[in-house]
Image (cartoon, rainbow, N blue to C red; front, side, top):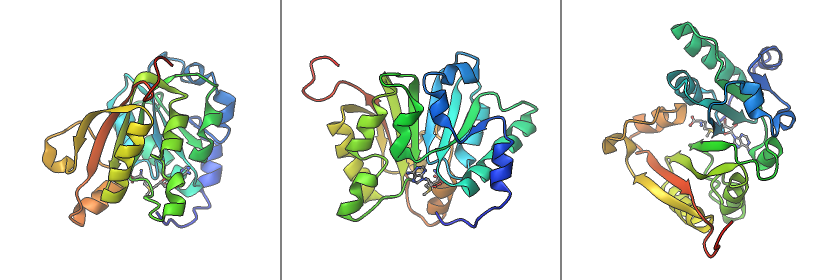
Length: 227
Ligand SMILES: C[S@@+](CC[C@H](N)C(=O)[O-])C[C@H]1O[C@@H](n2cnc3c(N)ncnc32)[C@H](O)[C@@H]1O
């Protein structure tokens, strides 16, 4: 997603109490920062925050961390979070925003710290060229990293417009020891109501492109007796 630079984003983020550009400092301490003992869910590539702001405000029983790389995106996400909570007269107490390259996500957690119970991956870059496949957020290599902090039985909720990425991801999930819980190739025609639309989802839906959606559960690795 292309986005213009937003000179206000960096200073606003630095002053924001629910934002950090040093997520490694919270490795092993996410529960402490939230201070409420609730389960934690992560959105990878949260973009402008349309999804996480609504998801978090609608679901006060869980905590949410939105991860992105780009200040302009996170600045808009911060404003969307503030707006969503102001509308219901609450403080954003169950949401955090983080600057981090997802390829370095392991920095956010201690080794073996399975503290996350759900990961959302919404409309990530399909990286179509074979040489780029390893960069896909659903690539087996990435999924193996997520296993390090996703609880056993924890889920990944993945949405995309791309059939090619979706089909490849189903293979990646199987290779990385994930079991399918739910799958649809047309989310909006499926009757599934538990998923808030993202900015990209709205755009692709207007273009008539169906949203492919799968819920995958972390199980044992193929061939592994116990982990
Ligand atoms: C195509 S946009 C999708 C945004 C949003 N999830 C949606 O569905 O509208 C992908 C987002 O992922 C972020 N992103 C891509 N690669 C990333 C990486 N390696 N680390 C962190 N964020 C990344 C981009 O900055 C962008 O905001």
